[in-house]
Length: 252
Image (cartoon, rainbow, N blue to C red; front, side, top):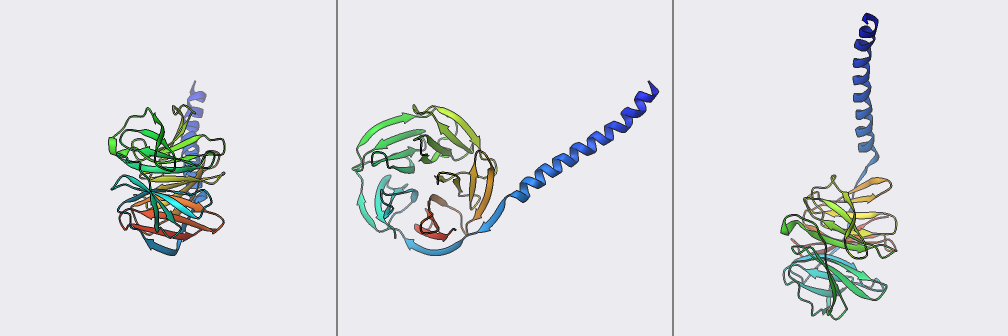
């Protein structure tokens, strides 16, 4: 028994030291693996949109569809943000928007009601889906995107700060907690990585479910509300609802 007690006294400190070392390596390793980069501003364009929120490319990437969170309508613009058209759809709390290449339609999110709305390019409603998730009304759905399999992903702003993967009936299939961000404002998916925008963190987080957080791209301002990524032009495009401006940043 005395021999056992002596071994136990030796083993406990060693075990504690080992566990602390493993924890330190794990956390410090995770921190070191995240590459933090400051983005270079290329150009900016003032928008005649009071509160630009969600943004998505049009069919051939010659312009955008942009949500106005103030008037609760959707505008079609050119690449410099000049308004070409306004849709008839009138929302209640519009935030996210996605152009669907499969049928040339739009998907939008209503933040407070936790709804996804499918509309045509005239603004006529095609369908509406309720997503069952609890939380504060004004901390809900900020962005929507579909992957190549036409699976929908939504970012929820806060509590939970999460990326939601949805079934085809818009029930929640999986929830990914984005605890590295203070809040979530929008998302873009390029076929490999998600570009998760955060207003409060003043950053874009590059993430995928296999590798986790890969990069943190720093922005020079808060209130970034919408994002698209243009790999052909080597840039990230951001709309800011405080400055009513569309920004182009270099990204290679």
